[in-house]
Structure formats: structure tokens, C-alpha cells
Image (cartoon, rainbow, N blue to C red; front, side):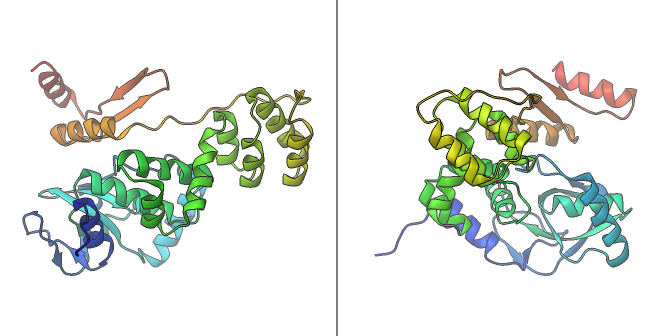
Length: 301
């Protein structure tokens, strides 16, 4: 009996399983992938990925990469999808894209792929997860988005990214930690081992107190594990003082999709920011008074 597979799975198999699939610039987009070579695409014609899982880019490392690109050029092509004539959108390779702009390049080698919005989200997530330079919270958030927004089980998620299910589960558990501890893990103030020890602390105040003292006093993972064990049934009093830090609040897929659709309509890179309470701002760039008038005309329709 033939095993049934969902259309999204078939899309990923077709897109991720063949590195030579692309679309020549003069071919109309449809559901057929055309085998060919990479294309030289003008940077000005490429928009960033609105579904990009990564929220932070190290500026110093971007500068280092741009210097390397100036000397050697782009070694690995970026991957884009075609939106319309002379208009493309990044699927993967945003670091190379940003560094190339810094290096003054005007064109980039690229694979042009067939992908709808949800396939694009999944490819961006999988591509980011498989990179070694993601911090643990970025990996955990990517797993969470694959499960929630692509509608996968933990087992299916582990299969998509080629990881053991236990590995996926352990990363997801990190998201149960308070935002301050998640931020500390993202910035390298504590290790994944420290964070896993803190997960077992039931009292949030105790978690934060141990976390701050760990940073201030340089506790090892074993020392934190012993503290957690010793104070399992009693309160832990913090001895150090640190400032409050917060984590970014990623947009849900539905809102990313709305921003993406509006960006396509206005032909602009629109930015939406919001906090956990729902407050935020929508940023629409314009180039001159005439451009601004067109935006108001669209809003008042």
C-alpha cells in the first residue's frame, strides 16, 4: 500500500532534495520546477525574507564576511524565489546578502526556487536550524515555529531537521524558562547546561535568583545543579544585583503573512514591531512626497 504524503512534504522534497532546481528569469512561475544553473541577480531586485527566523545579526561578523567577499567573492549562492518580473525574495543566505551589500556588490549568484509562503517559512526554519552558529533559543524558537505554524508533531519536526526527538524536546523545554534567562542563554551569559539545570526549579523567583548569582559569581554547571538540589524545598535568596533584560517577541506567521502581502502590494519593505501586550508600530518607508501621497491614497481606499 502506498504511503500518503502531504503536499507540503512533497514540496519540501522537491525543493530541498535537489540543489540544481531553479527558474530562469524569463520563465513564468508555475508549479513546475525547471532544472538549470544559478543566475546572477541584481541585489536591488532582492527583498529580504519576511519569515526569517533569525532576529539578530552580529555586525562585526558581517563586516568580516564582507571583507572576505571583497577578496574572494560569493562562494555559495543564495536562494531566492521569484515574485514577479525583476523582483525576488530571499529564502536563505541573508548573512551573505547583507555582507555583499556592505562589500559594494551589485549582483549575486542565486538559485531561484518554486515555493509558496508556508514552504518558504519551513525552508527558512530548517536552513537556520542546521547552521552551527545559532544560539540555543533561536534553535528552540525555530523548532516551536515548525511545530505550531507548519503543523508538525515533535516526531515529524525531528525528522525534518534530522535530529533525535529527545534533542528537539530538550530545546523546546528551554522556552519554559523566564525571558531573562532565555536572553542570558542567547547572549552566552550562561550555557545550555546551566539552563537545563534551572528548568527543574519550580519557583520562578528562585530560578531568577540562581540565574543572576550564576552570572555574577561564575558558577559552573555542576555548582548550579548542586544549588538547585540543595534549595529544592526552600527559597534561594539572591546575593547579586543585575539589570533586567528582555527577549524579542517574534511575530506569528499570520501577521508575517499580512506584512508580506502589504509589502508586495506597495512594493516596499514594510516592518511591523509589537510587544507581548500587543502594542507596536507599523513602519512604511517612502522616498519622496509623491511616494508618500500614493501610500495615503492606498490607505484611504
